[in-house]
Amino acid sequence: MSEHPAVAKLKGKFNDSVLDVAEHRGQTTVTVRKEDIVAVCTFLKQECGYNFLTDVCGVDYLGQTPRFMVVYHLYNIGEHLRLRLKAPVEEGDARIDTVTGVWSTANWLEREVWDMFGIDFKGHPDLRRILLPDDWEGHPLRKDYPVQGPDREPYQGRLS
Amino acid sequence: MANLETMTINMGPQHPSTHGVLRLVLELDGEVVVKATPHIGFLHRGVEKLSEHRTYHQVLPLTDRLDYLAPMHNNLAYILAVEKLLGIDGQIPERANVVRVMMAELTRIKSHLVWLATHALDIGAMTVFLYCFRERERIMDFYEKISGARMTSNYFRVGGLSADLPDGIEKEIRDFVNEMPGNVDTYEGLLSGNKIWQKRVCGIGAISAEDAIDVGLTGPALRASGVDWDLRRDQPYCDYQSYDFRVVTHTDGDTWARYKVRLDEIREACKIVHQCLDRLKPGPILADCPKVVLPPKKDVVNTIEGLIHHFKIITEGFKPEPGEVYVGVENPKGEVGFYLISDGSPRPYRMRIRPASFVNLQALPQLVEGALIADVIAIIGTLDVVLGEIDR
Image 1 (cartoon, rainbow over the protein chains, first blue to last red):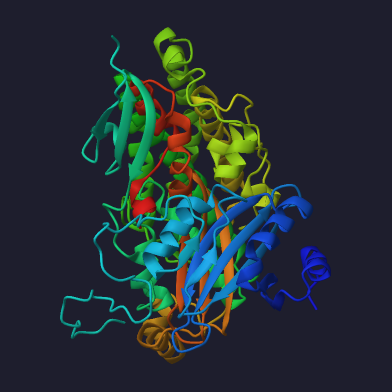
Image 2 (cartoon, chains in turn brown, green):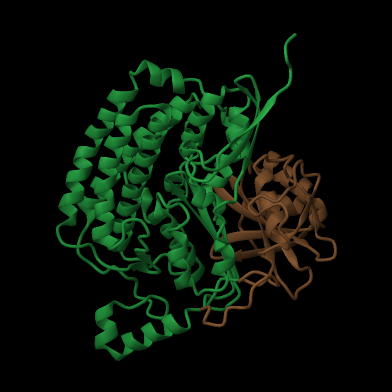
């Protein structure tokens, strides 16, 4: 059972939504259903003091279902606590609600997740590619996207 | 009849004051900016993708090419994340930690010097540029003597350092940090009382503490808005809690405030380097974890165990147990963090870099809208962005 103070509060309020609580090297990760991500984030910001969104990123677990995870790193500036929040996203319905309404920081970070993983953020004010050109095809950080790019022969030498 | 049409112009990516390859599309009403849209990605190298195909050790050289003005800070953030993932973060010898802190703070001075130099040059004060680069050159010399490279330092290793400090470097660094506060006074003497400088920075690009937190600013840009938050003090790494330093804050949140905060941070960094030099005692520089720490060269060529461990780590890499960690450090520009996921293989399953400049740049449209086009230059400078880190 996690010692993290936000976990008990989250479980009290969103018991059905919390899918998993994991602890590794003293860091706490809470996995929640993607349908509740905005409600959970709003609750954490307003009731638990997680006023700073450090990062949003995606992870591709190719071969598993659900395939994607959207990972949020939150920070509590008052008490100096971190919390990692994850929401699973299926490949067939690669969409999740945007949290730009909770923290403006999420704007560019979610655009990058869209750019790199092709995960659509519903309600995002300006969901365009950010690092790659607008006419780029594919989403490079997906595990099935070749490292050398789609239009080149695979590298024949050692990659490691 | 007044013409109410706005004009759209393109600034960058080759504009010298955009600090690299930042492109801004500005919508202007006369000289006033109505809307600013940054376009980034010109320097995208796919570091996160590449790192999934390399061992943990091989990822290290990619990291100092992110924020190339503060390479050792990126190395440090990455190394700390790997050590946390391996669970050896408590076993780093004292000397290694002290050297890490010392190099991190010298890097902070170096990065802030480039910021001040280019910021002043953009606004028209060329003398400051020359002075700052003169001092920066000395830190580059330390870099070269200590790590062998002026920019791509690649000096820290999982478990410690790649080499011990060369003889006589301590005195040179001591001389440097003795002189540096006086140099900062010189820069201030050239700028702070200068009417032109004051007109160009006071009240320009102001942001409140709430807005700064909402948009995700970190580092000096956030502290200039009055938020007293520094990861060195609040989430200490490398034993930072045992050093005596002040977290510099300011209340105005404008370009002047950010200027003052960074100058004071140089002074504080000098204090920390002094404390590091006082603590520097002979001792081991590598943790005693032979399965993951590369052995020193003399062990590789003289002992069979050293040779085996070296061979295993280089050819196969080490395999952290499955799990995930995030470690953030206080870079000169803000919080830089590494989020590593291990699946038990010798390569990171996923490495995410939390870039400071990328998130800080996001505040740019908010800061420049309503400002004059000439102030856009000052505001880009005051955010202190590095495109290598933004585009990754």
